[in-house]
Amino acid sequence: MLYIVLSILLFVLSFISGMLGLGVAFVATPVLGLFGFELKHVIMPWSLWLNGVTAISSAIAFSRARMVDWRTAIPLLIITTATAPVGVWLLQFVPTQIVWWIYIAVLLFLAYRMTFPPKMDDSKAQVIGDMTRVKAGVASAAIGVFAGFLGVGPGFLMMPTLVMLGYTARIAAATNAVIVTLPSFSAFAGHLATAQFDWGLLIATSVAAVIGAQAGAIYMSKRVKSLTLSRVFAVALIMLAMQRIWILVIA
Image (cartoon, rainbow, N blue to C red):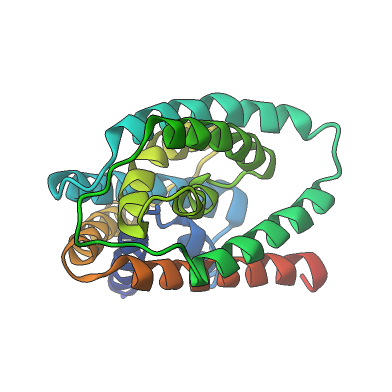
């Protein structure tokens, strides 16, 4: 029964994350915690694996729909992966709790901007200038450091940042799906030595998550407008901020 419940749940969660161009870890981690699994050795490697496979699944669907801006995606993938270790190194110098509050403030600011985004026209093919890509590269370096410091994926910060720079939410989400793949697997590799897997659950939930992410990405590419996607993402940012406030203040 647990296999069936978790597979269905991960399908639904992955459908939503696939629409947003994100891996599923941001919501899978707290949800799996509700079932009593141990965090460090079970949930974290499990979620990171699911994050990577769902990101790849949605990225493939977006690529087939020709929504990925590869000239943005590849450099930003390299930059965020390269700068994340700098954030890990900074852990020894800066109080983590202070940075978590900064992170919350950034999430709420981005949620506001995503609720009232720049005008986006999905009816025309978007032309991205080289200067915009340079700005995205500079921003991604800072996001990579920040993500490495906090041990979170860069996707939640990258997607709204691309929107603020002028990308439509649809193109930003599709491009973001590519960007978050490698950091997910590099983080997963760091947990392999101590990870404890129930291989049956891992395989069942992985299959369900891949199918869900693919379906979510296809649905978004065909039916969801940028303004709607932007506001759905804003809600997700607010929920993530509220979760972190709960951990800092109450837990």
